[in-house]
Length: 247
Image 1 (tube, rainbow, N blue to C red):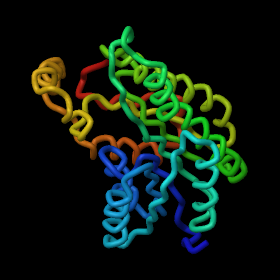
Image 2: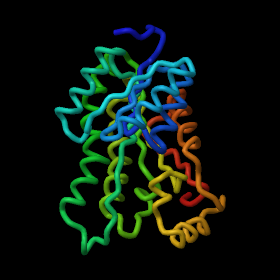
Image 3: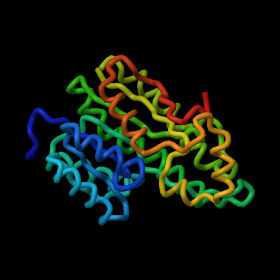
Image 4: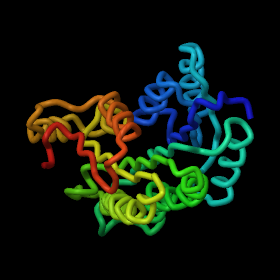
């Protein structure tokens, strides 16, 4: 273990791209030891790590499919050996497999539920014991406005993201007395590669419904994460960062 004892260790799942990359960079510049978890893209993960280190921070990239319990346990073992236990957990990893419900295959349902929701069960079970023991912990689950409003062709994604909200509220009740907070961030439509893949006419229609009349930026979500880490009297809540799309 080679981290300074004054630094807390944060794990960002899906931390190499989009919102996850912005969160990793923000926390890397804020005196945390940052673990950038990724599933496939080693090159992107190492770019984020190198940026953090070049700015004077501490970071490592670790590959793990956190939907797999054994791989998730291996991830936490590596983190402990390098930095020590996880103090702050940002559950950001997520995928989409959009399709109308009538055409959706069980595999497309299961893959989204496993990656977006069951993985959070895995990471939280491994992080919680240390947090309770030290009487401090932060768990921030990245949900979505779709988990609040629903989305056409997104029954799998909406179910997983809505599940995160209920999960967070329940876990917050169990851990508040131990100094552990559990909150959600529900991003609206953010300027990421995932959103950029949407047909332009669909995206224009969405922008027209947003009171702020624009997409959010990944830094908006990273700023929300920083706030929730600092907040001591906020737990079981959803921080809605959506330009007024859902109030």
